Image (cartoon, rainbow, N blue to C red; front, side):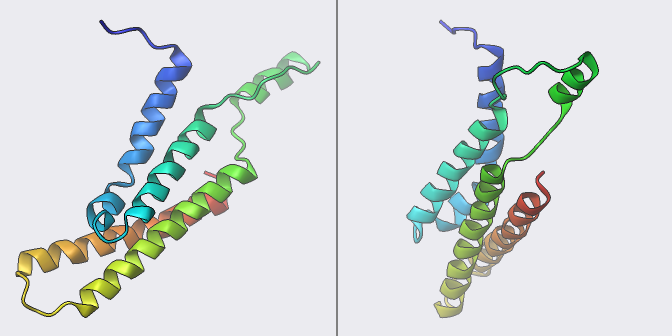
Length: 139
């Protein structure tokens, strides 16, 4: 029996799934050697999902136009930006650890395995660039 979710809960679940999905490169490339980075990344993503879907509470005596503008305004808090910058740092850490691992391994592994490791490192490096930029610009 499925219980219908409150509309705010649906939004939170969708955001959690989306943001945790962005941690797939981290999870796939680092779970064996850097499990703490994976757990930290997923935890930060869940925190970001909660921060993103939480609506401001309270009311103020504003005019109708100002009230409408307040409802549609998107303002990114400093805490939200800090979480985004932290996600970038976690991905950068995982990318450098994976690059060091690739450099230390001998050339006995298959070309497919090596290509997958390079793809994982590229994905981590890309996410380590995206997260800080969204934190800086407050997106």
